[in-house]
Length: 186
Image (cartoon, rainbow, N blue to C red; front, side, top):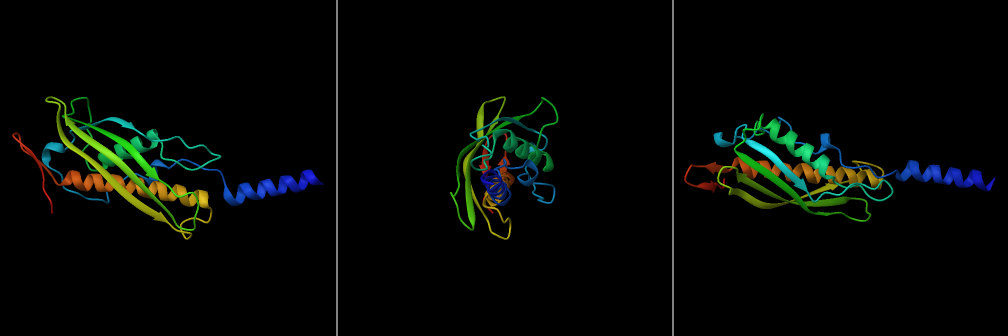
């Protein structure tokens, strides 16, 4: 009888709280609905070189943003804005490093803030065109997910998507001239 009670309690806990799962690419990527205009020199000219700083999710602990998932979301986002190079003839290399992902331990509303450093380099000259830390918060509420584990995952995904969106917005302000590069504020 004790074994049956323990099994029921364990199953109930798993169903109620669940296991942690990693942030999903489909919920982090920016799609075609975000319509930004970029300097023509960036069109089909960016190669995603390196993504780092992410953490793999331990199902028994908390949801995380993994390198592979963040890289796939960033690559898909660049492709949706026609920035991703289609071949090895790219002009620019982009690297992104997840510097910090601030997560709550528990709570009804879960706010996650991701900080990512994006570096865009012109390959032929090794000149840094863009080097910026972008910080983006996102709050998942009880209405987004019943389970705290799922709410944290939603907050991770929202923060990563918001971060990529902010990066693309900054990139859309970049004006490239053969003699100088400037970031134009709107």
